[in-house]
Length: 532
Image (cartoon, rainbow, N blue to C red):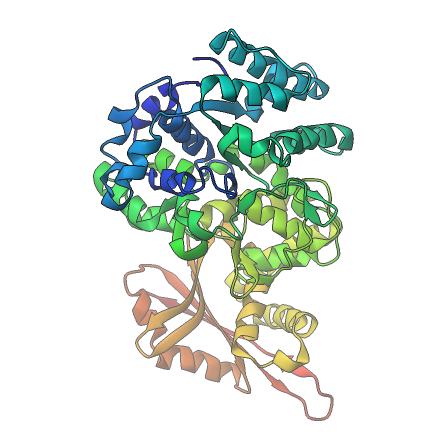
């Protein structure tokens, strides 16, 4: 065994000894690519979504210098009769080359030494394993000769493959040399199939683009936007989280509120494994993203000076889904042409969820909403500061019963932000409220269409435990009097749905109508207090 060649199964043994969710079905997908034109696989997903665990599992499974039967025989991959033969056929049958590129970066003095360091240390492990091996000038020739001596091809596993792309920033020379190294191994029709039975790369970003094409185009890529068959292996499924909560005495409803919201491919709800496991261990629910380096960069990205970005972040925080074009993203952290590229990066980082059917994004859950709200408060752009202040003031005016100020603010947003074609559309009216109150997160949890005795409340802002503010039930109506909007709230018996809430409720009716002479839409407001 070596550091880079056949690292053994120690890492996966440790994983199995802890809280564990069976993701061995991933092995079946990789096995299906062995010795086929599809042998090159790249799976990208956000930090803390189990990338390294998957890589270490594959190392333990393929590494021929250890016996991993005891680690896998009780897992899904061994129990499935349809794939039992394939499972046994490939178990511990290959020389494995394992690279954790984040660790490699930490081991070199300069990023310029990255590729020479990798070549030198893999070669050292190969010579130790195969003393008769004579090293060649080209690294891929050395690998080909080693495979011939071994009598078997390599399975190569690269964890955090994109770490050099991310760390190099705008140093295109370092990025180019690294990509050229990968091309020499994986885009070389003369040797790639001779050396590798399969390759599995995992990282945060999709493969860097060279112009409009992937820099290593022979890889089949699976991303959070296009996960295909890898969707259920991008994180924990809801069924798995429910099972963990039952097993570890965890609170599943709270787990769902905090960490659900990622919908990836056909897998349905996907949860961040890191946050789920930490919440189970600590019995505390909060944002664990602050413990990742990704969280440090959120403010940097959302404060970029692109037209419409500040408003878009406000919309997302308010709970509005936003249309995005993901096609032009360059798959790095520095090349941004506009708002859409920033939003696309945030999808890959896990801060936003992309709905393929609608091509819209939204903030997935309470954990990530906290990170956005925190970062937005630190944004020093005048436009952002103004938006936050106005939303904070609107909440204060609502609580203090300043109906005239509330009506004026809602009217301003309605007229500025809503296209005339959709002015009276129900979803547009709801979006106006959400955009106006987008800074609610400090004090409230938002519910839409809360079931009532007769119908649905438009939007309800339910105060958090530590908040001294009252509960808000808000209706924005067209061609009704302010009193009529409040009457409708009462007639629909919305407060009955809140009967378990023992505190103050503010019923906020905000109607508007069109002045036939001026074409202006005048908004009014009535705020009425109730005690339950």
